[in-house]
Image 1 (cartoon, helix red, strand yellow):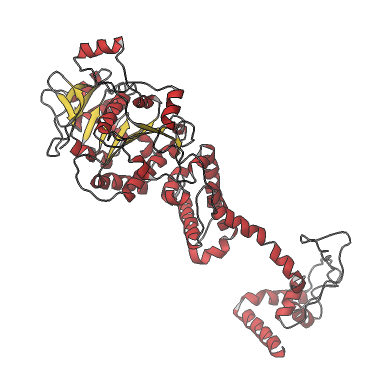
Image 2: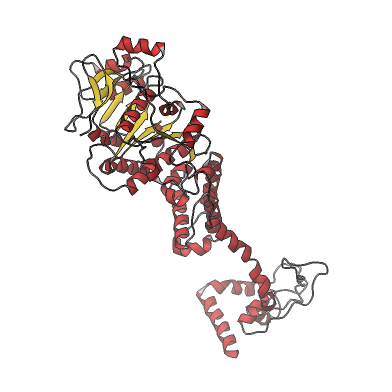
Length: 543
């Protein structure tokens, strides 16, 4: 059994996290500047020391200091002495830096197909109708064996489906051109936020985030998110995708002596802001079930009310930093946070939340039987690694020494939907050119061929003009010289040529002309359909 992990301390005792219950999830909450980042750093390094790989998003750049050993400055020594806290054994943690943009770490990529329509709809902020169209596009791509790897593949697929919407309608349902346009515009916005760099190959192998170093310490994977946070939907969807990948790929293991991995979700409110109900249900399902796969999920946010009750109820290990009750809403938040702790008769929890100093917190971890301990007030311990970011040179050295250095740096663009659809588009204009001598030059000739008549070749061409295939294009003939056939001839003959005088001029209809035109319009009726079948039948018999 692994020893408890000290996280905080007060005058009476150390407040420790039990490793065997670290997969029961948790949360770190508190106002800005109250010490959440240091608490996150202490928790991550404590888990790494016992061989647990960790993932976290670094939204401010401070967590890069985990890769360098800390030191006792005069100010820090004074604080340790004042609070009667022990000085840590200064040491760096093994780290791996990642970055969606590939600037401050190894590139992180996912494919469009792997992300799926539900998460993409969340990222693109689509409504239900647009999400339904996106799901149809994925279905059509799957049925036709077209790989959707990056954003240009999805754009090409959207264009293809939009151009052939009538052909797909009977099998897949209506495909709105307006929805296609909305998705295309959303993709452009995502590309501008870095989606063109995130979507592609080689895709991240989730097992590369579950490594240990030569000494048995778990690798702390730090995602550089200071720039990514400017695209909040991309940020939140990316982290949710990672969580889903862990859930789908890891086997059931039950309760272990320590977690297989710990996942810290900073700025967690971005995950739940304006999230549709199906997505919230998916998050709740993942959080509830991923525990049995040995993964502990920790949400870091300013206010516990940012987390839905269905998810908050799954978080057993909690660290609450100070909240400020300046407004009526803040006061309600303080009261709600206090009521979620197991009450301590020696402590007024609601009052203590507003009085906590920087680095001080209310702590409640699970006991050996999985029950929440009574809430205790204490100071978070000092991390053994450096508090604050490393320099750019130190970061580059750590990236070069990483276990995955050189694996993800070079992007791969293999044949997928974009290449195949563009290849079809190039070939399609050539087919009519090769068959042009065999096809009729006008619709009337096509009608005549279908009715058993011999198509007539074009009589003249316009000098100096050429068709798209390079051959001279036929000039449009005057109405009186064009070959007519089929139903038009029959009705014209029957009416004694009263449809027109051959000059193309428009005049008011005579009573007889109006009667004949009314009869022609009746083709859509039952009698009209019978006339058409009779005409075609007689022509086919003659043929």
